[in-house]
Structure formats: C-alpha cells, structure tokens
Image (cartoon, protein in one colour):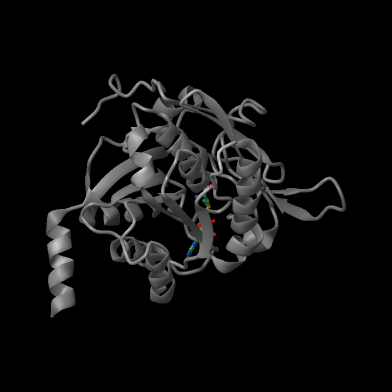
Length: 304
Ligand SMILES: C[S@@+](CC[C@H](N)C(=O)[O-])C[C@H]1O[C@@H](n2cnc3c(N)ncnc32)[C@H](O)[C@@H]1O
C-alpha cells in the first residue's frame, strides 16, 4: 500500500505531457455545461473540466517510451448526440498519466506486452489508445454504438495511421474500437471473443459515475454487472472516479463490495500537481482486484 509520500510521480521510463494543459485557468466544477456558440446561437456542450475546457479541438498527448517520443491525438466533438462521449474528460487524461508513471502504474513497464486491455465508456479513447502505445498486446476501447462509430473508431484509426507513419518498425497499434453497452450480454460476449475467449488482464473505466441523461434510470447496476462478467481474480480493475453528484459514490460503494484495493486510492493532485490548486477536485483513481469472497459467491450462483 502506498501513501502520499511514496506516490510522488517519478516517471523513469514513461513520461507523458498533456497537450492542451495550461490553455485556460483552473475552473470550479460549477462551470456551466451549456453555452451558446458564437456562430448562430446554437447550444454546444462545454465539458465541466479543470484543464480541458474545449470539446471541439483535437487533444495531443505525448509519451516518452524508453527514450522515444510518441503521440496520441484524439479528436473531440461537442455535438449533443455523442455527448458526453465526444469530449475528453480530465479523468481520461489522469488515467493515462497513471499508466505512464512508473511509480503509479499497476502495470510494470515490461509487462505491457502481455496485457489484454478493455476500456469501458472510452469516449474519445485516449486512455485505451495510450495503453496501446505503451505496448499492450490487445486493447479494446468500447462505448455506446453512436459514440464508437462517430468518435472512438475514427480516433483509433487516426492513431493507427499516425503510429504506422512515425514508428519505423513494422508494428501496428493493437487497438480496436467496438460497441459495448453496459449490461448487454451479447456485447460482453463479443468483447470476450476479441480476446480469444480470455478475460482481459486490465479493465479501465473513467468518469462513469453519473446519470447519463436527466431522468434516465441509473446505469450503475449494469456497469457493475458488466465489470463482474468480464473479470476474474487476476483482472486488474482501474476505476477513475469523479464525484459528479451525490449518487456518484453509490457506484464506488458497489465496486467496493466486489473488489479489494491493491493500492491506496490516488487523488488527482498526486497525479497532476495542477489539481492542488483546485479546492475540491473530486477525482480519485481506484486500483482493485476481485475479492476472493465475491468471486466465490458469483461462481456458486452460476453453478446453481
Ligand atoms: C463522461 S464520459 C467519459 C469518457 C472517457 N472515459 C473520459 O474520461 O474521457 C462517459 C462515457 O461513458 C459512456 N457511456 C454512458 N453510458 C453507457 C452505457 N450504458 N454503455 C456504454 N457506455 C456508456 C458515454 O457514452 C461516455 O463516452
């Protein structure tokens, strides 16, 4: 178990830099979500973020992998039909930073080539694509169908082309975008098929502790069930939790029923120092594994 002192980032092997960071000042979570665009007065969405303030510009993320500079570029789109999946959220960047930082990452740098990675609610796909650049064996970035078609898949293709053009070795980025609706067992089966029948070694979910649309039923139970269906006791589950509303913590509590911590939760300001100036940032990264008790209960329920 780490502590604040032990967790000071020290990126010996991987270093990452956030492209748009510093573009605007840190803002509070009470920033309005909707603004009128300058042209035509049509409403466009603005993310409630601390350092990514604009959901229409491409975002460039740079990674130094064993001394070689690599980039991930994700395009964003603030359109209503893909919102909030069309935007990159602070949690997505912080999760990528965790995987890039030797002292924070649950995955040792030389283990990436053995990792099968599944990202749930990937949106623009930054975190999952970064794990691909770090060397993951297979990465599946997933979301709702409309988000995958218009946002996630084009970003995976963009980075695949970019990777081929800059990486001299005949190596491709092993990242795929696919629909996975939480609670949908057919989509879950398709994910397992992608990993040739195996469970992923790493599941990532970031900034998903919210109600999708006002008045819509909570998706928390579906999400927990999907994570349970797609994991075993070896799977590392990395959950980027942002408390967006009172009910957000219910999701964390649910996960804590089935998963044990393998590391202490990491608050945002230990990942990115600029979060220190945000009074109450409400973002914490949780690194967990299925608890033996919860796993045994599920097995026996399935057998009966
Ligand atoms: C706030 S965004 C976070 C995106 C990304 N993880 C990040 O941090 O930038 C939440 C994501 O969850 C996805 N999502 C919401 N409900 C979903 C569901 N039932 N099944 C699959 N994805 C869902 C949304 O489409 C969106 O991409």
